[in-house]
Amino acid sequence: MRRRQVWAVLIGTVATGCAARPERYGFDSATSACRRNPAACARMTGEETLLPGGSQALRVAASIGTAGDAALRLWKAAERDAIEEALEACADDARSTVLLERFHGRTPTPEECRHEVARDAQGASITWAMKLGSEMHQLALECARQRLAELRPGGFSVEPRYRRGTQDAAWEVIAENEAQALIQQRRASELKGTLVPDIVIHMGSPNQALVVYDFKFPCVGDEPSTWRVYPRGHPYAGRTQKFMYEQALRARAFRIIPRWGVLP
Image (tube, rainbow, N blue to C red; front, top):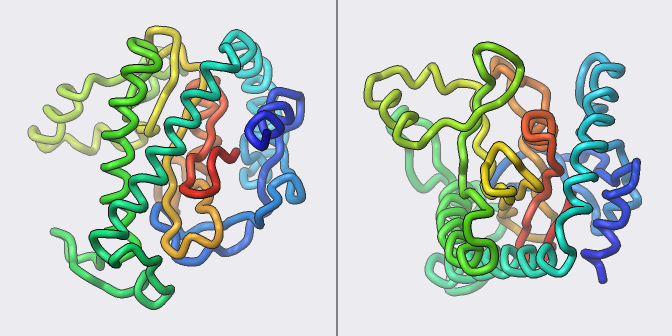
């Protein structure tokens, strides 16, 4: 019932969103979160209130609403529900499995979430929140591949990489072997600004997206993780993942969060 209510609102002309509020120790980001009633903190779709130039953002949101809603109406509700239930189960199982291994099944405390457990190759700190989130993410994606292969063979992509075309404003998919070749050739800078959503449900090609899903794993778990906001210096600084996914793919984007399910 909760999922049907959320989709009923989102397929209308106005979608519910979340008023920004500092989040505590999120695995995927440390941006903002919503209380347990998302409808109480409504905002127009596309996260346009975060962006400069309101009129441009509203035009983007309007175009997404037209194209995205039309595509979603063609997607059978029963199949959509089965896919979302499978992805929710993948997120729940990934969290339980990792916490059982790392914390004997209990939720880490805020202090533990902040605790540094390692450093990366560049010397940056890796906290428990980051480490656990990475491990949960990997398990959830593996689970999603298996479940979606059964539910929608040929109609989904896991972590497809998109970049803006050189000739026009259209976005195109980069093959993983091409991306890896650029990295090996020390040309990784050419991948800057590419988008890599977790799951894209499509009509046979990742360029024909129906809907986008991203797994999010809050560390403490009492509040849902929000969409990442790109930092200063990034090509999309100040924008959210949700906004960029919807702008690039012309499809709705949703979060999959353990115990919370599917959220805008």
